[in-house]
Amino acid sequence: MRVAEVYLDTSALIKLYVAEAFSTEVERFVAEVDGIVMSRLSMLEWHCAMARRVRTGQLTEAYLNLARTEFTRHLAESYYRIVPYDDALLIDALRVLDSVNPVPLRTLDAIHLTAARNAGITRIATADDVMRRAALQLQLDVAYFGD
Image 1 (cartoon, rainbow, N blue to C red):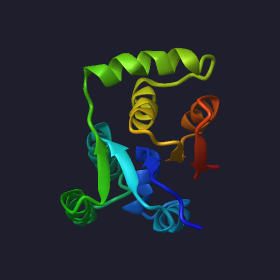
Image 2: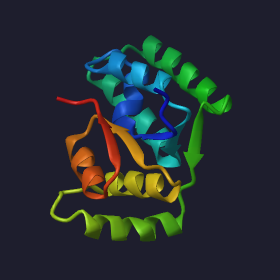
Image 3: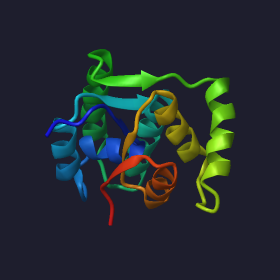
Image 4: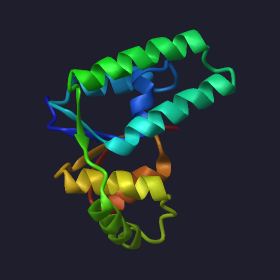
């Protein structure tokens, strides 16, 4: 059964480029959706997360370069629909933060959830449990790829 667009947060997005726990499940999930949406913020987070994996020895520089090439190609080919990051989104993120209390939502997760909502997306894919709990509190459908 095909699923409409889904918002992929960075924790799930990374699994498309790095073989780790639940990567295969994310790949299968993405194959069943009609579109992938992410925030412009995800582009920076993706690069930060990949660089961290190189620093910690999880990835080589050569692998990073291949993954960057693939990610850049996906962006250029509009594989992802990108939600803009602007002041209005940040203001809306304050409302999201208040509405999920007492879930300990982090700044960037509040931005991701707000980006999804502002884009009209009702389904989130994440590997982050705090993001999962906050999304559920916002009455979003969640595809969870974590332990």
